[in-house]
Length: 362
Image 1 (cartoon, helix red, strand yellow):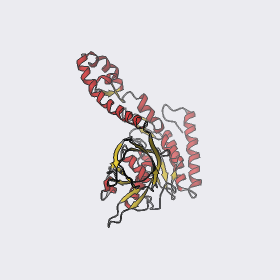
Image 2 (image 1 turned 180 degrees about the vertical axis):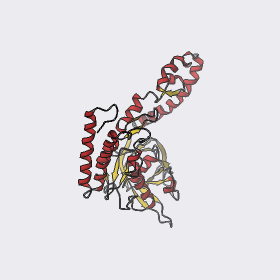
Image 3 (image 1 turned 90 degrees about the vertical axis):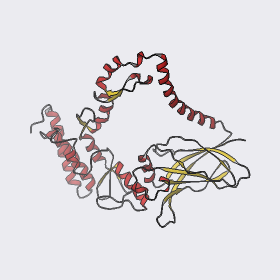
Image 4 (image 1 turned 60 degrees about the horizontal axis):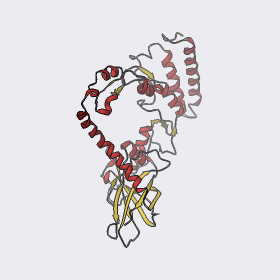
């Protein structure tokens, strides 16, 4: 055995022992759990990559693509789930499969063997995740190869070709370029020499964006000074319409806030006919007052993520005056950041959020 150039005999022996142990574990667990066996096999192949001459080169092993054929998936994520028959799915595909099944009113199935999959039936395969983290992957800036577990740190902190911004961006410099050119650019940047009037125009544009952010937080603090404030955890449950082609919608059980009874409803892509065929997915919701009121009830409300969810929701305040003839708000967007976050909500059994209600005093 001859180690690759630049590799010590101690490192080579360590990779050899890891490969032997992983291969033995794969053979021993093959009948009991094919998923675990696949993970150990990937670990053995990753060790072989570091030992075999030529397999670590750009020509023969581009970002571990030859190992990716073992699981028939590109190695794009660290988290992997496996079905009861041992087939692997990355976390993004797993969530997307569950969301699609919810939209089509079908049971989610493994794309390989068609067995049922769900968050309770599938679990993460830590052996595969460990093996994948050690596989070589290419930096998108300098095109050098690094273990996947170290790639993120390299791209954010160490790569000399990573895209960065001029330190004078605060006064309007739009420059974006590789890190190794940053010092030369900042030395020649023209923005520090601009006149006061030129800088004021740039700063005015930047202040407008800051002003919108400040206005949102000021509005929230103002609402917190109201006399009547209520909040509750709400659980959206999935239902189907009675149409010939049924559509998915969500509704909460009745709940009481501010001594009034309410219901929340939500729909996907504004009740688009086939949202499962769309790459862009959104959720919108409406607040419905179920109690009878004798006088107009002016309220502000917003939905935020629940205490146990990791979905990203941007706070947006909505206002409405409820009355005897206006008990339902229009459907308003649930301000989630993108379709990935929407899929996370759709993949869940129920959607758990937190509603805040502020009653305006007259």
